[in-house]
Amino acid sequence: MALALGSGGARGYAHIGVIAELEANGYQVVGIAGASMGAMVGGLHAAGQLEPFAEWATSLTQRDVLRMLDPTLTGPGMVRAGKILGKLSELVGETLIEDLPMPFTAVAADLTHRKEVWFQRGRLDAAVRASIAIPGVITPVVINGRLLADGGLVNPLPVVPTAAIDADVTIGVSLSEEHLTASGFPDAPAREEAADAHESTKADSELVRTLGRWLDGIRGQLHDDDAERQGVELFEQLPAGLRTRDVLDLSLDMLRSVVAKYRLAGYPPDVLVTVPRDACGSLDFHRAAELIELGRERTRAALART
Image 1 (cartoon, helix red, strand yellow):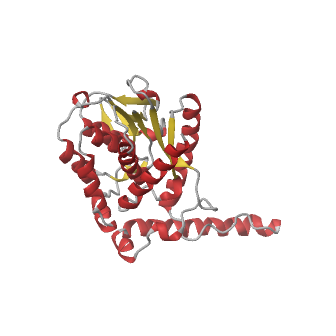
Image 2: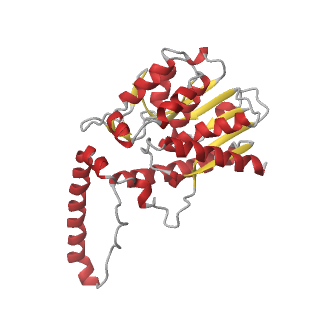
Image 3: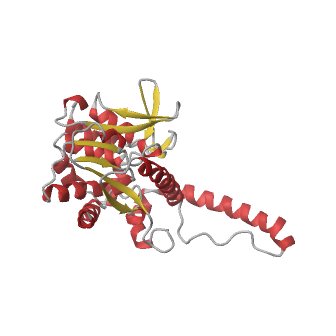
C-alpha cells in the first residue's frame, strides 16, 4: 500500500497508530508521502526509526515539551524547534531520501513563490524540518533560496505524490475531520492548563494578558462610540479561556480543512482514515500515547467500512 499522511501538528502522532494497525492487518507500506507531522512520521517509518521515535514521544511530559520547543521572541515564529530536529537527526543521521528503502515525498510550501515543493531527494531531516514549519508557531527555513513552511498550507493530505508508487491500494490519513464537540472549541480539560505549564510559559501568558487588555480597550471604545448610540451590543462574550494559540490553531485547522476538501475531491485515496480536529491542540506533543491509540481506533473503523 501507499500512504498519504496529512498535516495537523501533534495530531500527527495518530499516524503512528495508523501504521501499526495497518501492518497488524497484513498491509505492507511500499511508499509514503507526508505533509508536516505526516512527513516526520512517514520519513521515520521509511528510515526504519519509527519505533524508537514512538517510545521517546510517549515518554514526554508537558514540561519536557515546553523545554524542547526552543522558544524565540524575535524570530518569525514562536519556536525554533531545534531540539525536535536534533532528535530527528539523531535517529536518521545524514540519511538521504533517495537512499531510503521505499519512495518518500515530504511536502512543503514555498512562501515566496507561492508554490508546493516536493522533497524526493536530499537530506531527510532537512526535508522534514521544512515541512513542519507551522506558520506563526515554528520558524520557517531557507533551502536553495526558497523560504519554506508547513506543507499543510498547500497540500494537507498529499495523495498526488503517491500516484507514481507501485501499490495495490492508497490509504490517506486526514487530521482535519470536523470537530466532535458541539461548540467546535476544545474542551477545557484537553487544554491542560496546569499551574506548572503556566509557570513555564510566562512570556506567552504576558502576551495574552497584554492583548486581552488591548482588545478590552477597543471593545470598550466601540461600545462607547457605537453601541450606546445604537442601543445594542456589537460583540458577544468571547469563549472562556480562549488564548492566542487557540485562535491560531482554529485558523490553521480551517485552512487545512478547506484545502483538503478540494484536494480530496480531485484525488481521493482508496481508503480514508480520519482524525477529528479537536483531538488535541497543535502543540500538545505530550499526548502521544492517547493519539497513537486514537489512530489505531480510527483505522479499525475505516477498514471496517471497506
